[in-house]
Image 1 (cartoon, rainbow, N blue to C red):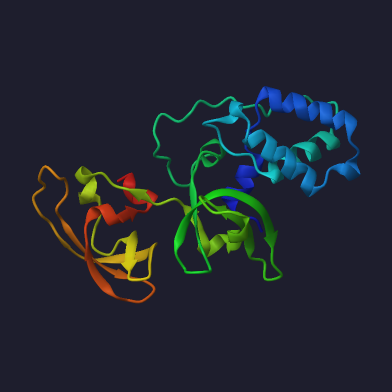
Image 2: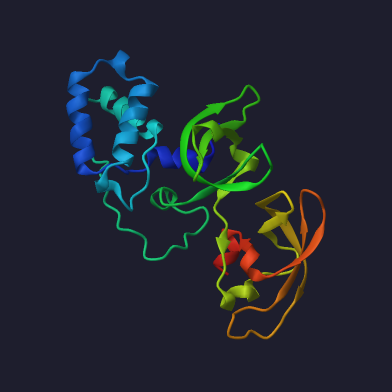
Length: 239
């Protein structure tokens, strides 16, 4: 069964009036057999790369496909899925929010190559395995097609972690799951860690001077780091 956030994303009204007009025109011209994944992906890419969509959510091919499916089921119905939302006044969005909020969310995915977390640029596809698990095909921000991966929605895709301002260091507590910048001689990546100890310090002109002792989940190594190497989970940033 599809993850609730993906299902809501597919059903969210995201198209502008000009995009709907273009799809209405295409609907009258193409046959049902021509509405392939490639066709929908090309149209989604065209919409997403348009200057009219700057600052708006990226369109994925499943949303285009869903629009044509709905149109085929009732050609006479008026389609009211144009974009009515304003940009959110705050970048902080409550977890488990409405469908309109979900379309604005940013995500990160855990790569199977190095078990590090990377920002997701777009969701390309999804599939349901024989086990019932849902996977999504992700393109990582800043990487090309050769780095695309299938990621399990349950344990390898989540809302993007959030860096904190120096004045927000009090939000991090012992025991918290955090995303940490891990530096090693041959690589540097963002990985999960848990906060083991916090040494609270007076802040100065340079900002937060607190020391956070974290234990990395992958190798269990403990390390002392500062706030600028920590991102918190979204639910913590709202507390």
